[in-house]
Length: 541
Image (tube, rainbow, N blue to C red; front, side):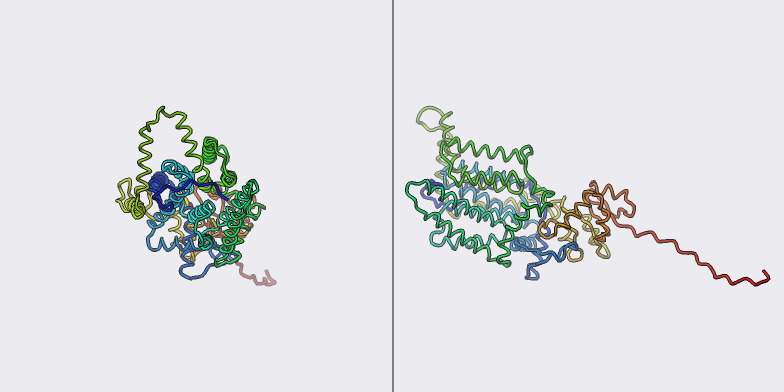
């Protein structure tokens, strides 16, 4: 069913995270997370979490918008949103950043744990973990997909380790997919993962001299349990079908507006992200070719499928790093060993590096269970509680002091303060990227024209938004039809430049980040002159 695994080093439980795994995870996060903390749409997630937490109900309509108030909304990430809101309500911005750091650290630790199935070398596992962390670097954002990455790693552990869980394996699968379906819609990847490993198992059995379909049956049970678990949500079968309908609409062109959103753009071969993907894939091919070992069908399928996903959509790049980890772990140590023997010194006496490696492996095997989590907690605690000025301090490393600092381009603080002080709410045509911030700061007092919730608007609203955004011939008619009274947009945008010369609009607020245009009232028509009624003249005149 899955590739043969190297036995775990004696004297150490395979589920104990390694000192080297924790260190490399923390180093990777310290060198990348501090430069890329962002929250492009955390704000509408926070408002949704607050609504669910305070009302104990899930919204089923687009309550945040005046353009589609009756459009269905299925909040499939509701549990992530509640966790984000409760964290922010009790710990503030500090808590959100700490939560994101913790989730990414756990993901790196799980990647390291996954690699130890195939290698006893802490250095090879650390190198693979660091490369996966670099692949995840571009999407270090406070969004529910962080939970999805963890669950994806959990599913990858399950399909790579057919004995995991023992007799309680169905319970483990059920709990994993139940939580996944309530935290993030990417549970479809977990089901696809099981299908891929079922196909690989079938191919392996058909090629084997003695066929036994026990592994295939075990995976089939896992898949059936996983499908049933994905329906244990407040939305039941609709929550299970939602990701499939979303993909169907995307592939059939019904969600054509996705081509205008950055994370749904293809990486391309000539972009920095595309070159990063190419380098990573070439490194994987070097490991496979250099090991002189045949890759398993499952690992080939993972590498091919997620390479295509990564090139086609930017948001899938982190998943490529995670999916390639088992193949790298299986082949990289052998490839490095062959290269080392090719350029190594003659004689049987081990070199300095070999002796250091053996000591590190021995130290890893002697590590106490209680010391490793304590070490990770201590490093994280020092980083977050240190004073601001030192480089290890929370604010010094992150530059985050308040919520708006998490992604200033997506949070026009000055503009929102002006809108909040207005005597009465007005219909505002808002910039797409600012929709989530408008919802968090202004709802329920004011609703938005549009925001980043792609599934909450009919196609007509997106057509109207881009008609105005791109200054199409009917853009003025769109504003009239929706009764727009204000326009909030970046000051250097085409729309802002056009409005400066457009009669009937005036600037009421402007800073380096945003400009607010207000529609002028129509000019008053001149009053008709009143004339006294003339009496008929007498006859003698």
